[in-house]
Amino acid sequence: MAMKEIVGAVEQSFREKGEGHAEMPPKPGIHTRPDGFIHAMAAFLPRLRAAGIKWVSGYPENYKRGLPYISGLVVLNDPETGLPIAIMDGAWITAKRTGAATGVAAKYLARNDSKTLGILGLGVQGRSNLEALQEVLSSLEIVKAYDSSDINQQRYVDEMSSKTGLKIQGVSTAREAVEGTDVVVTAGPILKNPSPVISEDWLAEGMFACSLDFDSYWKSESLHAMEKFCTDDTEQLIYYRSQGYFKDIPAVHADLDQIVLGRKAGRENNQEKIMSMNLGLAVEDMAVGVAVFERAKKKGIGQWLSL
Image (cartoon, rainbow, N blue to C red):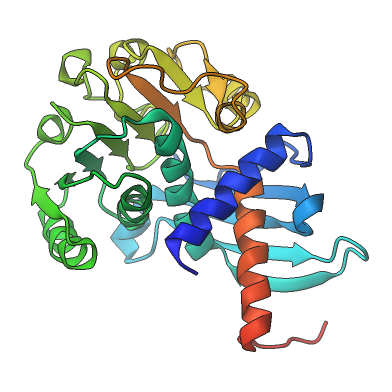
């Protein structure tokens, strides 16, 4: 499934949510390790005939074991009978829909003439976010790539230069990735007690930022420097604040579904700095999951299991 189609599916999931055609309860979770989580994310999109749950974990120390940070399963259910109809890899869906959500946010909140992109954190999300942003920002030319691991950074530069045809530059500091950059994506691990480094004076006029790691990279002064501070779901943001995250963030200007539907303003000029802090929504997983499932059925891909 091409990223262009995934971006379209995720944008539609925001429309469904904003128009009231979605059921998505707050995601409960358990936490077996410091900064590790296992979440249950359920959603129903009636008009897409998409219902199900994602059982997903994120463990930032897994790299020491040679294991992925994110893992999980997506289970789709028949909306008519409730019976499970598919079990799918949740890691791939999470990676692609998260990148696509950044792409949707950039479509409405980034400058159309954005040429430079800084990505901090060059794992799975560093790849999928670049893939999605290239779809929506036709003027993109240069990517400044930063990772705490030199090996990961060089692998990313080599791989994504070949894949995208863009000029990918490995940089030695977070500041180099952010300073003077049109679009910034931070994709490190989510930490309850982070040591943020991005300062207000690093931010270029008219820049757009998307944070996938909460405020792990962002000092409070840099967050408050944003003329518009957006998120994908204010209700979830409030919940996370109650759990000890987001100790000092600005008031939310709008949820992405409100911006997609034109109910709240997106970018209004080329000078304002804007951030979307995306938490990740189950409606995105279900919209992409059902599209993958329908495609697999048409192509005869997959294995039938007996219940």
